[in-house]
Length: 474
Image (cartoon, rainbow, N blue to C red; front, side):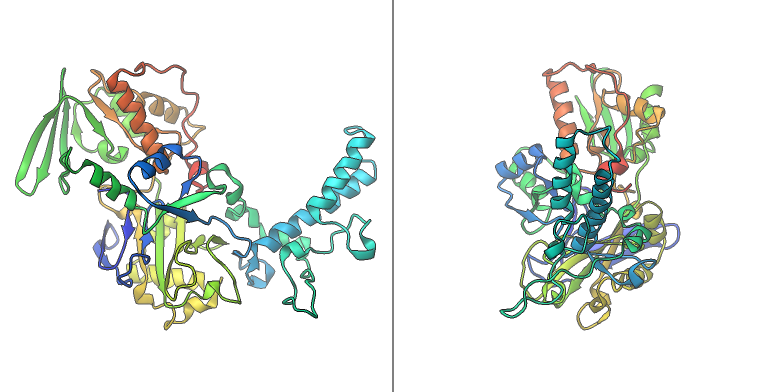
């Protein structure tokens, strides 16, 4: 129950199936502690996802802050900075400083005299000095960037030592690094702006909340794969396999959250236009790796990282530091989160190779990950969602410039002919890859069945959702 809302704890088993390695299983060997877990699927809830937060409230799912970004997080690339990790704050502030310096000099030399009047030019120069932290000491009137204490202190402050800015990173090094191509500015995008939340003790607390609320009202059958769907005039026949053998159930309505590419492979009698729309959807590959560490060294004096994400130009792509249980001895972090070709390549590796490759990458950020006594390899685990049976990916990869995707998305917002069979989930919402999208879609379908809204669209769909941008996998 829960689909991709999947939290992994001690003793849980991850089963995958791939052409390269057949059926594989991993057993989670994390410490048996409610604070020790890996959110293998969704990991955060934006403050503006009001539907999901509403259900967390009425289901008594306790939320805590999820930290998307701290300025102590790191960026690393083998092709820049001598392969040494740099702090997020220094890259961001030094880049702002150099851009402000150049623009201020352009204004000062009259390059924008035609665009701005005198008062506007003076206001812009004042803004650039503040935003770019230009000038220093006796040269405070100059439009020069010398570095900034916004990037931290070069030496630890004491009663004898005031905070001095670290030497700025040369602008040429910043440009050579192409740091902005590694999702560096993702925390500024709407879906990831603070405040964000996570359920205390794991994302599947939401699923458990729904189960508690519905346990006396509905029957939930698991391990019952659907084998055939037949839409009739006044009902829908669904055939499925169970432990007791093949079964058939007839329902007035069917609301299907089956991933569309899997639905397309199930025997059905859909009309051609509906079937074509279902067939159009593609699932995005995505992988995660979880590490249990016996020391939360990233919170210590050397790094001082409490939550947030470090970014790396490497197959591991991202490292998520835990936003819970600060100052404890043990912690679990997400040591890889990737998509696209990186996820395809990673998913084809053996389980052991995945962990070795993931550890090799994360050591570039923090060498402590290479110390077996701190981060044992056998306490790592991975999941390639494209290899998970009945899921086969992380989200539907709609393309906003595809006319075929727009037509399919538009068609799937409406039921199959007869108004008895509906598709639901984040896959048919403006928020693919987000739980809010799934609830949004369910709300749309339930209101349609109940007659609260017209089944015909109010406005035509111009384009399909931009899945890559919305999920941060672009």
